[in-house]
Every structure is written in structure tokens, then in C-alpha cells.
Image 1 (tube, rainbow, N blue to C red):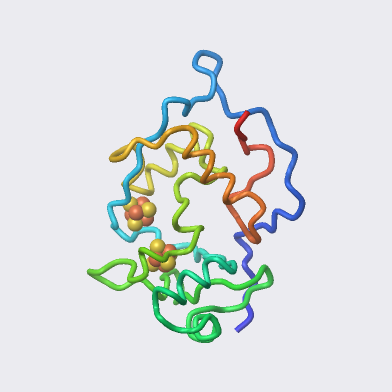
Image 2 (image 1 turned 45 degrees about the horizontal axis):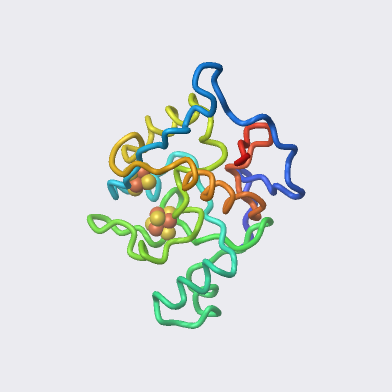
Length: 176
Ligand code: SF4
Ligand code: SF4
């Protein structure tokens, strides 16, 4: 089935990079790192009010194929839909196919990069947007402290990815 992934923008050419998100008193606001440990609550995986698309690239397909012990072609056949922006994980409305009640993500060790890098997406690297993400995701602001380097490395992994809806030009801090 061909889908139009309207929530996600194709970043195309890299957007103009704005000044790093900063406040006047402390420089880059996340310089001391940010805490995040996934609680595996599944809120980002199921019953989302707004359908969310998980875009897949070759590395994601390879990792899923190895984890499921099937061929990449089978991953595509059984677990993927095609959108105008490329392959996405199949999802019932608002719920990822890999989400199982009381278990959570059944491919967690092999989950796609889009899932692996949350919440360290460029769109969350403004203080107010981070706090907005934290209101949704209970893993934010608790657990493991991730350094600025780790945070920015995750953001860089997301930059330039097809359909990465987290890319909002002008809100993208990059390492110096
Ligand atoms: S909402 Fe946050 S804590 Fe819950 S499963 Fe998703 S990433 Fe993990
Ligand atoms: S692959 Fe796993 S972590 Fe990613 S949306 Fe699906 S259930 Fe959630």
C-alpha cells in the first residue's frame, strides 16, 4: 500500500544551520548533558493519536533482517509499507506492527535508527521543545546522563535521512 507520509518532511539538501540553541547565561543549554532512559512504556509505539511513520533505510532493514533471521526482501514484504518518502514500518493506525501489548517493542535490540535516536532529535534540541517531548515521554529527564557529544552524534545521524520529520530547518544545532 502506498502511503503519503505527511507528517514527515524530506529534508532534501541540508537546511541552513542556525546558531546553536543557546541561552545567554550558559551557552549551549544542554552542554552538561541530558538524562534519558527509555521506560519501555510504549507510548511512542502504540495508540498514537497522530499516526507516526518510522522510516527505514538499508541499515535498518539489515538489522531487522538479522534480528528476525529472515531475508531483507522478507522484511520489506511482511513489515514495510511504501510511502512517497520511502519505506516505512507497517503500522495499524497509530500502532507499530512491532509493538505487542504487555511486551513492548519485540525488535527492541534491532529497532530502526529513528527509534534508537529518540529523543535526541534535532527538533528536540531547544529547551522548550525538549520539555514538550518530556511531557509526552517519561524517559526524558530521568535515568542515564547523555553527554553533549552523544546527543549531537545522535542528531547528526538523523540529519539528511529521508523523511526525517524531526528536521525543522532553523532549529538544528550542530557541534562546533
Ligand atoms: S515514550 Fe519514551 S519512555 Fe515510552 S517507550 Fe517511547 S521512548 Fe520509551
Ligand atoms: S520499532 Fe519498536 S521502538 Fe520503533 S516504533 Fe516500532 S515498536 Fe516502537
